[in-house]
Length: 571
Image (cartoon, rainbow, N blue to C red; front, side):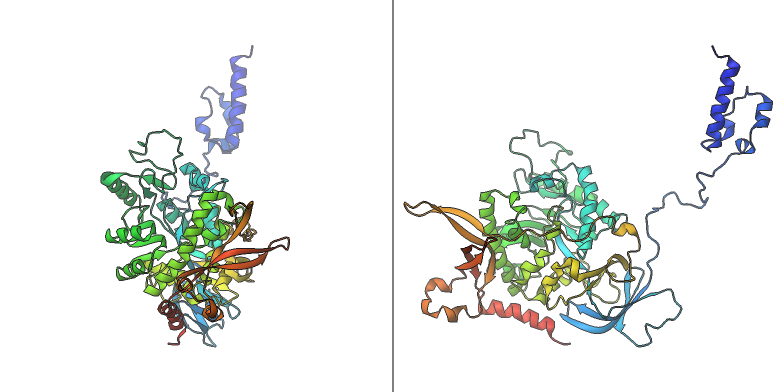
């Protein structure tokens, strides 16, 4: 058995190791019963408290946020081909002075302006680029995240897990050139603050909290066999994306709770609050009568409803691309055959609706319905809209109009004095070729948010912090190949045969009436015509399928073309 003295010696050695490693102060570790000569033999550092591990500045504020970036490095961008989406034109040889996160001055480049003057300013010659304001996506769902094989699964992760996974989605959206997003169900004030403070690299977030839906409505993701009581989340059933509320008392309580949590707008999926997720013309008219400010999707609106929206100053945010790429693998797994059939109807109607709205003078915004799994298709919306509308009109939807909807006109979406310094460097002119915004890897050379470089392929310009791009590969993933829908149809007593339908919709060709004058009947003068389209599949086999053609009235086409002409007109 070890003696008490041996025990103290052993303890002293143990404590000596601990104190030598600066884990604590010596006075709290040395036993009073230790002989005096033992103390005399101990190093001086044993007897003197140390703060080497935590050398804190006594003036350090414990409430400070250490991740906040310092002052933005001032930039002078000169010789820029400046994209003006409001006027719809390129202004050559322009300079932008950026400081404190804002555009301090926009002016023609002077010869002596970019000469060295000794100031700590980074000067960038942008003569090879089109400098465009950052893009605004007015319809995303950040809380529908990667990691699930189905769309329902993406919406159904536990709230805490979904919150963390949104970091990847936010980084990807910023990398696509969208410096501002409007989340229409799921995101919270935490997302808005984290991206504003650069804790998470991502776009500026305008959020509404959880979307509101009635039990059994579009926002109710409860499985049909789930018998769990709806009485949760303080009496309001909730998921990462939405919450259920039935009747006036529930809706009032849910809306007030979302506002308490910092919602900047409210989205009522099937109701009448600030913005409504709505498809049919009847639903849109009912929502307008209730005083909503915006309509999400609105695929089934007619000309009369579009006119009503314009008269009441109601925004429309269509989401068109989703109806096309949901037919392509792997996204075709998101829908059942019946769902794909309905998608064809809704998708075709949506392409007509956006034309009706533009012709009526509705403020149409750019939305993609982007989630984590569909992130790589976000910019494909530019391709789809370009088939129906002129490039200047589409770019205006993704900049000026989006800024109006979030209440930031003059601060976002255009390169003017006092605006946030959100800028893109592009190889191609988006006013002539808006589908080029879908060429993220080859066309988008630089992204600035709040005057800070967050993504760059420009020589000599790098993100201010490595965390702004992280280790994620920002190269776009391979796109799914477009395909035709194949249906089996039985004709009389014949065997079942495949029938093909193309998911896209196109406008009538300009010479359609001339080429078909010999076959003009009343049906050919309808708003839509089902035509045939011939393509070859991957194996070289010729396929013939149906394609929907949309006819705009002369007045509607002139109204849309007039907008493009007006945007392109010189001052």
